[in-house]
Image 1 (cartoon, rainbow, N blue to C red):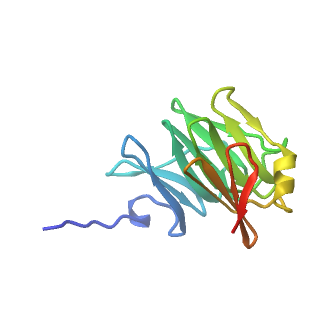
Image 2: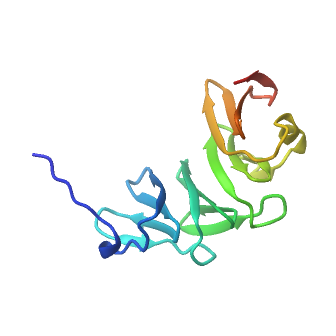
Length: 171
């Protein structure tokens, strides 16, 4: 027999407006809502104390035991070694982060102000505006990586890029 249990507001989740969910390597369920970020250990919800109150969570991504959290108006947060930090994108904290993906060398962050690349080797954010110019606009709504190609979705168009960020195909 299969056992199902429902969890929600009565169990400590402050919002029914769930926007994204991720399970990390430790089995913790991360839940992004319109009222903030929560983690669930199988028994109880705990509100993640990001550095701001009630951010709208847009996307959550897990890469090598680092949790990346993109918000609707407060930019990018990273949870590493039991500590939260906020990362500036284009010199500001208020970007809209739509999508996060990674490969073995980089983490790619799609935002309303372009594509940002976090180098795992140098531990720094790169924003190459010439890459954004390839897309004729800066809004990056979705990212995907497959077979060493990066797929970048903008308004109505998907670009296939190789690892050198040259356009291979427009879909």
